[in-house]
Image (cartoon, rainbow, N blue to C red; front, top):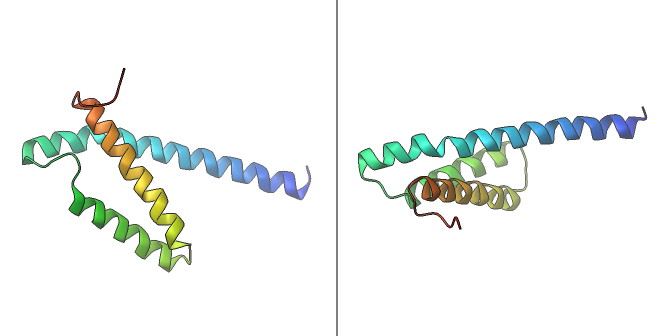
Length: 95
């Protein structure tokens, strides 16, 4: 196996780990939704979204990552969680 193939294999493994973590994150939506129902919080909690984005940007800065790209990624993750919570509450866009 060439060095390039070896690096690509490692990237593939990391991509699988990232996808597994995204799956775990989205699946936590059910627990989040239950807590929001108990606390009377709306599904789209803008304050919490801001906390998550700021935390991600701070970590991205520490790791010297492109904060613009990290912000986009976390906005997508938040959107995925909101969509999942809407689906679980019966308000989703399911056919």
